[in-house]
Each structure stands twice: as structure tokens, then as C-alpha cells.
Length: 131
Image (cartoon, rainbow, N blue to C red):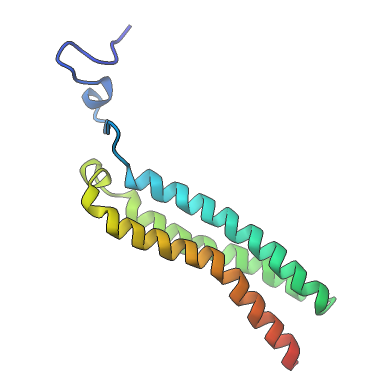
């Protein structure tokens, strides 16, 4: 059975080329997690906020199709955030100097995920009021 830590203090992960970040943060994984949770938040908000607005508005199927399109349209935007961090080297993924850049992307992602459903629903309501 292989040892997790050898006699020189090296970990098996370090020997296999996997980054062992004792207590460090992997920006790649953190952004991937943020993207997954933001997609869940966006989808949930988009459904509940839009369905609430639809009850006040029209009874056609068009708004429901628009809802599907809007949920599907956010996926490429979120993947762009993830791709920006996904291909970083192990050294970059653990570099604390990237925390400001990470926080900026994280903030923009969450503002988009939380704000966009309300903005789109507001636009939808304005469209219904005019039309």
C-alpha cells in the first residue's frame, strides 16, 4: 500500500503531479463551484419571478418559450467565467495574488445571476404594459 506522505515529507499527490495545496484555495475549483451555484440561483429566480409576472400578464405559450431561451442563454455566459479560470496552471490556481481578479469575476457573476431575472421580468412587464 502506498504511503500518503513519504519519509521526506512529500505527499503522494505532489509525486503524481497533482497540486497539493495545504490550506490553499484553488481558484479553478472555486470559480467552477460559483458558476454551478449561480446557474441554480439564476434558473430558480428566473422561473419564480417570471412565472409570477406571467400570472398577471398573458396566457399564451410565448413567454414560457422565452423563459426556456433565457435560461439556456445564460449557460454560455457562465461557461465564459469558468473557462477564464479553468486552464490556469497549478501555480496560478493557488496564487493568492489572483484573489482580487477572482473576487471581481465572482461579484460580476453573482450580480448577473441575481439581477438579470429581475431586469428581464421588469422589461417583460414594461412590454406588456405598452402592448
